[in-house]
Image (cartoon, rainbow, N blue to C red; front, side):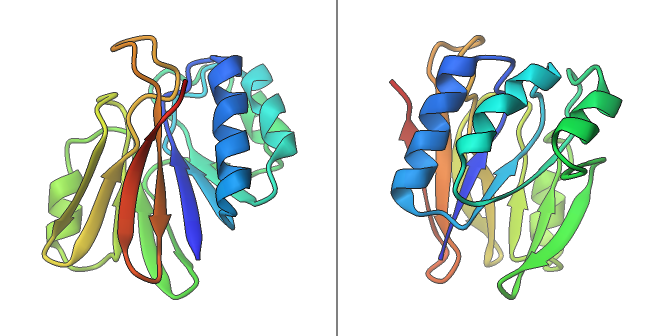
Amino acid sequence: MKVGIISDTHDNIDRIKQAVSIFNDEGVSLVIHAGDYTSPFSLIPYEELRAEFVGIYGNNDGDKVLLNSRSNGRIHPQPHKFTYEGRKFVVIHEHFIADDLAASGNFDIVIYGHTHKARVEKINGTMIINPGEAGHWLYGKATVAVLDIETMEGRIITLD
């Protein structure tokens, strides 16, 4: 079973549409957004998503009331902890405690964003993933991640 992971989209509708298309082609059953949508209109492309969706707020998300409404309550304050298909997830935006959360052994998967730098790594058996920046505004390289939660293999996918 695959999970799609995206972060730091920063209103880049073209890249969001690409990511949704990739997630649909990959057959992911859940997409997790690690924050920084920026504006509520940037949620429109997710209407084409053929998977569940959950996310958190990032530091650049302004209108949280409208983001919450447009997402039908699927965007949460951080940290957002949940279990999906028997795996314990925690999603944060800022990176400051990501390694400590992974090292704690309390989670199977730690997801974060904010740095705009892609990362897939295991710490003490916990998968830690930053999908990078889907918006590509900061470093010019748009990426997302896909994680197989059965094999615990993750990979970064570059958007065009």
